[in-house]
Image (tube, rainbow, N blue to C red; front, side, top):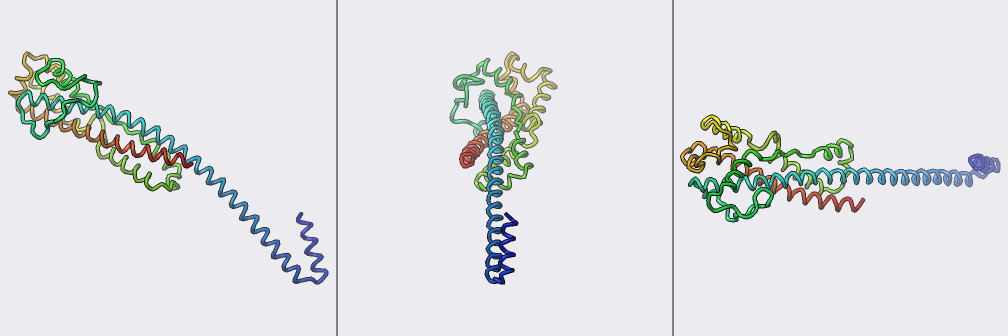
Length: 264
């Protein structure tokens, strides 16, 4: 093909048809440019197709990771809802001031720990549950891996959905705010202090406190223990609040991810 066009150019030159030669040469250049542009367009289309596929794959991985977060956040919310409300009831029973922490709804968020409403009066089984779950704030382990892979792959910056980026930023910053450095539960210091106090002053473990002949009277006459119980209750409220808010953020992120995936 190249020899064919070369012969045409030589023929035009030998016939002294320079103007036609010039037009022909320009035509050849235009054909070459058009060919290059078409090739670039095809290449760009292929690259965009590969990019969209990679973004979709990372978004699917991110969906899986956030759903795992959601399951754990739900467990943390239920655990600490019980811890907060049961401790509030305990403080009422020992006649401590609960005006700032009182709860209008006595129903728990779920029946996983206790079925039904919180007892109005002293209940041995509920009391045992209360002290058993004091030490179960449930550790939050955020699944950062999918987000880190997304960014490390160098394609997160290619994501054009700014709304999704903002939602992801709010979601992970919220988790860091509530659960950042979550070693073995929020405010582990308050739990340890309460456990150590009961051990040192009563020579029993926290879980055995309900086994005393009159645990309510013991706590009522121990202001230092009441203060420590309040601190643990505050920790439980913080974790419950964090889990509830983070679940809502997760829902918003998952909806936007699903919408973005549908467009790839």
